[in-house]
Amino acid sequence: MRLEDKIWKLANYLGERKVGQQLTEEMAELIVCASKFIRFHSGEFKDFTDREKYENNLIEEISHVEICLEMLKMIHRIDEDKINEEKQKKIDRLIKAYNMHNLL
Image 1 (cartoon, helix red, strand yellow):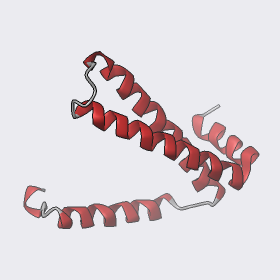
Image 2: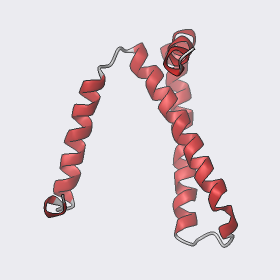
Image 3: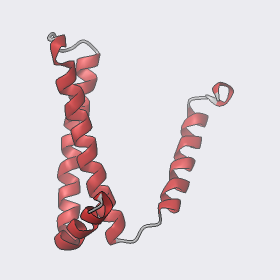
């Protein structure tokens, strides 16, 4: 079975409320993980042998959030093109905010 099909079956089984709760929990875990990852790369943590641990944890938490987001999009039949339009708007605002027009 394809990954997309598995996500769809899981989304249907869990329903909107549970998927929303799971997404909230996974996003919180990603926030903590990202904070630790940034602190590690800033040199705040002394043990640099843990780089792989922090990186793998970040990858894991990103994947968990993405699964929940996919389930939410499926449940609400959200058009991927509309999401991509919003992404483009945000990128354009960031380029303008950071005055990066000449770098692109």
